[in-house]
Image 1: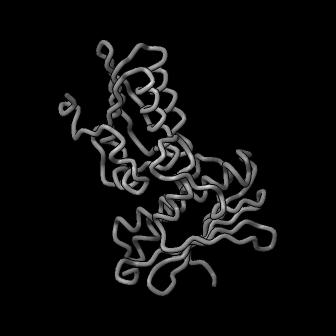
Image 2: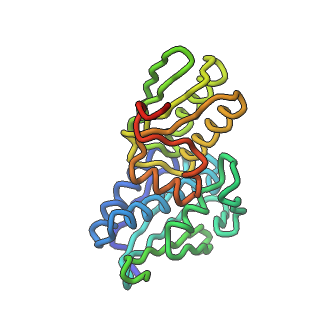
Length: 138
Length: 108
């Protein structure tokens, strides 16, 4: 399925803001309520930040692509990169009540979205997430 | 993101303007830790009234501020939480971990 909206940025954290703006606009254009749109933005931001930190290990010379599509009842977003294989789904997730500083990104992705999947496709990392509108999620 | 600090004796208020994300959170973290560790501050209030967005790295910076405050027997307070950051604290189940006030005047 071809994405309706696709954006590619270099793997530097300064461009996360641009990804957030594009995704916020897309989620709202598809009729998601403001809390659901915020959750999509949050999950995609966390996924792209993981790519920068883990797949590219802070090297700003890579590329991160975010592709958004409409699916029945909501939207699907893919985050694709060419970095080192990194499966966030099976990355250790700390117990959320534990008072520690980091490591909450994947937990937030899973809490914010209806589904989060990872696959290696053509040698690239691909995280695929879905958010259903509240009427479909219930 | 812009940071401004107002100091009054051993109490500081950090005013944050803009998004707190992987790009900007290190600056907030450094500032809060510096206030506790090097500037002899015993109370740090972070005013988030102008922050519409925070990610997990921003949350991690706030948790570190809280941990440092506890280590120094100090106090770390968040004020002016907007819906977005409040929701992220709810999702991470940290809302009850922080001392939170509506306004600076509400911090006793």
